[in-house]
Length: 83
Image 1 (cartoon, rainbow, N blue to C red):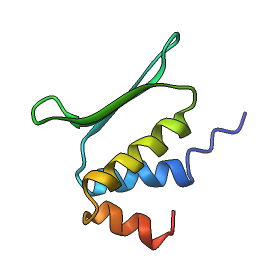
Image 2 (image 1 turned 60 degrees about the vertical axis):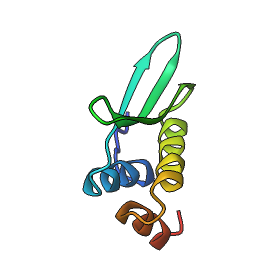
Image 3 (image 1 turned 90 degrees about the horizontal axis):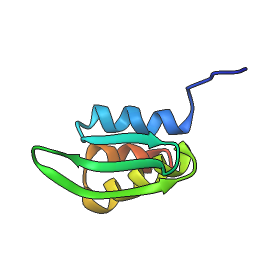
């Protein structure tokens, strides 16, 4: 089994961390992945669940961050890579 955790999805998560943007991700067998953008202390800007794959969940998170923070460091980094 190849456990290569590099690549585009990990780039997104790394850039979110670098940009100090809060998010959470969870998984439950019957419901799939759930993603929350924001945090408990400051509130969640968006959340969604029932993603079948981790990639779908991360892509949704990326889109939400770009909508809510279009001028952020994260948005600039994502646009540099044309991702």
